[in-house]
Amino acid sequence: MLNRPLGSQKSNSLMNEYASLLGDAVLRHRTRSAEHTARIEAELASKVKSEFISNMSHELRTPLNTVIGFSKILAEQNRREVDKSEVLEYANLIHDAAVHLLTVINDILHISSIQSGSHTLHTRELSIKTIFAQQLTAFKAEAKKADIEIVDRLPDDLPPVRGDESKLAQIFSNILSNAINFTPIGGSVNIEAARLPGDAVAVFIRDTGGGMTADELKIAQQPFGQVDGSRTRWREGAGLGLPIAKSLVELHGGELEVRSQKNVGTEVVILLPSRHHVTVTQMRDTVHGNGAKETVETPK
Image 1: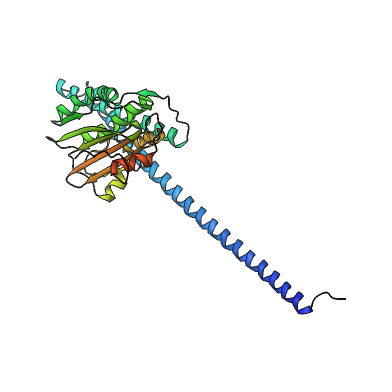
Image 2: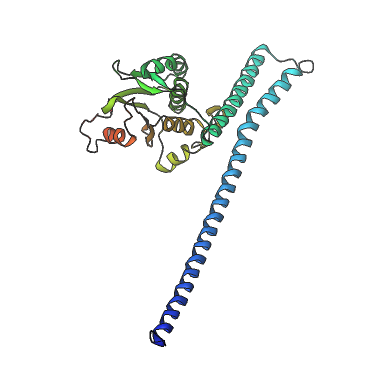
């Protein structure tokens, strides 16, 4: 004896069949979407790899050609005697090219180590002013040669931050080097800092260089990014300084922000948390004045 009408069984059968078809359709759609995403990611990875190889070829080949070319001239003194002034010039060019090669290789190793997650920090409480003082000794001499003024306005009462001394020194070195390289003769690089709530620290490095548009800024923050291709590229660097600095700041739990205006200059803001573990959001809100109880005015 049937417990329910035949029509009800038929309706349930149709519903089950419909649910099965719908499930198959959803599964096919998800499979197609996953395949499409995987294809795009593979194409992007291939493009990035090709760009990396192309950039690496340029960054290594250009200074290598300098080393090979001028060292060959010096080695052929028996055929054509080279003046002492030329010997000195060629030796300096070879030295600069070799230093650049070493810098590129070290930067690539740093980027690789950071991106693989194997980069470790040896942290302790540090004075930002002390680390900057060590860097400024060398950079002020370099800036003086280029007729660029470095203005140090770091206050004496900055709270200590918890970080890796060598990594923080590299961060400031990379940013200062960029600021000096892209500041014209007679310009200036200003360094300021401010205490944030929770004893976090905001560092401001501002130059009076040519500045960048929004599109140029995106390029500059990419590995090997070069905004100005009209200059001798290897003399300016491989375009890894800013990405490495940004990655190292983030490893410290902080944030690096670049603000730039064409024909006005560029400002790099480095937010470093304190031992009290102030979050990046809290630091950013304080610097930008987005509703934080205690605010710090960004230097003008």
